[in-house]
Image (tube, rainbow, N blue to C red; front, top):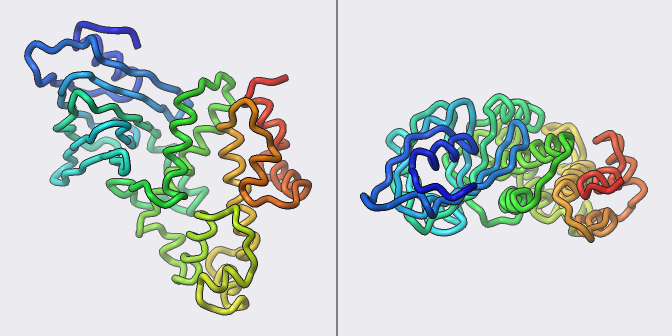
Length: 304
């Protein structure tokens, strides 16, 4: 975004990029010369990088969309209803749509990466993933590998411009799925309904898809026999542990291909995620996404 000396002009520009809001500068002689904002529009999902350069307060109801704010530097204190939340580089705040929210402390040194997801689109993707829309938690903590995937994907997308509409659509879906999986609210109707033996294995498979898992390894994680674990997966997820692992690897490769950089290859990405039978993987990828992995990579990198 161009440099602005007028707060109103800078506020309008950020509203256009991310969310409409009411801005209150907290220093009388401050100006908007140090405001920086940039973004990526993926259709139903937008990514914004915002730094005000001076201490401010904000109010927004986030009309029609969820917001996820993750500070790159500093911390961000917000109040949603009677709940006060502090976002840090290790914990993002989730703002529900059409709900008054106050950012009461946005200091001069704080910069964020924000993700805006249209509410209807998030519900649609959640229904595909879980069968219903879970209640989103007020914050998402980064820590475990699977909980950091979405933040890594956001950073990658924010650093690259993807002009093809189909690529933007696919990136929007991949990022929304990653955020939903990272949120893992306890109210999640799918996993919460599963017994602990199934949940524990699901979480480990998502955390370590590249590991050379055997049926015995999975059963050891669950603390039950192989037969009992397989029955649990069939009863509650309508699949087998091995097929579930294949799906996890397929989704992970898809996400990484959509965020690929020059020099990346399908083989390297697949192998890094535990894929051994490349031909079988390529066939499953094409059945699921309607194109070959190499087609995805070629399109993302702008090759012909």
